[in-house]
Length: 419
Image (cartoon, rainbow, N blue to C red; front, side, top):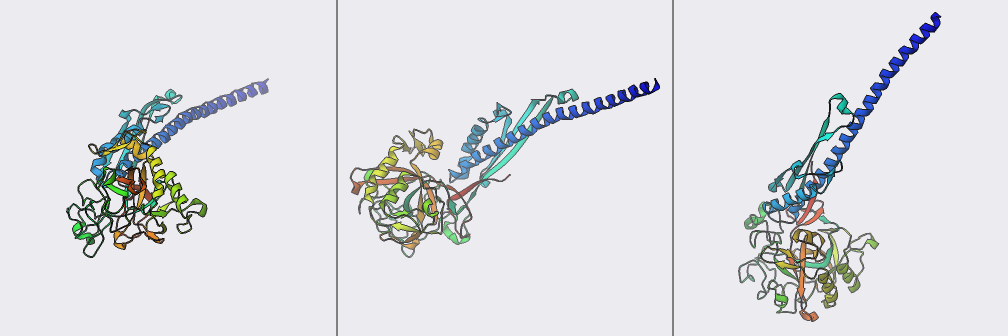
């Protein structure tokens, strides 16, 4: 019977060892479940931090003065963080902390979720877990390419300091002034960090749209014409006052240009031409990337027949208007100013060209842009000769890439995560 007794003893030992091993494996699996839950929570918190940092930093795209964007940046990052979830529960404002650095156009966000109960780790004395995530995003100024920004097929001269024609001495081409770029005039495109050769205009960040030459605020909300009336009427129809470039460009024109087409792989010089293509690019958003320093073709002519397309564009948000008191869009069917800037069909971008080129856009030729600007479209008038379209300057355009010339600047900004 000894063999039986030894066999039982051996089997008991094996069973004991098996039980110990199984218990250890189950313990590791149990702890692994809690660790997996913690890793998932950490990933979700990081996603919220990333998106909140980007939302906050996006405010620096909308303000020429970065210090003015701080309040909006804070509100955006909080709004975005608190409408997202970590482990199936909305993020609470107490779980969000932030730092906004306007000088760097940067926002940093921390998302912290503590007190998450464990399933199995509690048997080993670990009853709760916590996670924390951080992300930083910034607006890098002076890019070269815009994408998906819904451009209008119109080209406008950038603004300069006119030595002779600026009778009112306000650096604005008013209706009673016929501006033309001539010897003695000065032009420097907007630059966030102007080079020394900007001279007297270094402190104002240049002379072009977005600079502080015409007052603090970088022209935000400034009204200028996109399509003026006949000679002598620039700025008078539709209740507006800006205008006065009749000597510089053809009065009454839209100064249209040919946007590239996806059909031709967005080749800037292989584009459809003529009125139908111009009309289509008013009615719809062209998806092709657009770059400064690249030649595009112009579309000569008055284009007064575009009245219907521009009226339809304005009717897409017909009750929206520019409120001078708040320097913002009011009455939009899409919501307040910040939402309207993102969603209203009346917020588009236009191309700007160097006024030293002296173009008049009377013929079909090539044109090279050195900037793009976001605008809110206004307009009025009934008869095509008097139908005028204005824009409110809304500052920067989101984009990417490096400018082709390090000595100049652009209004194209790149929103990106940096940490």
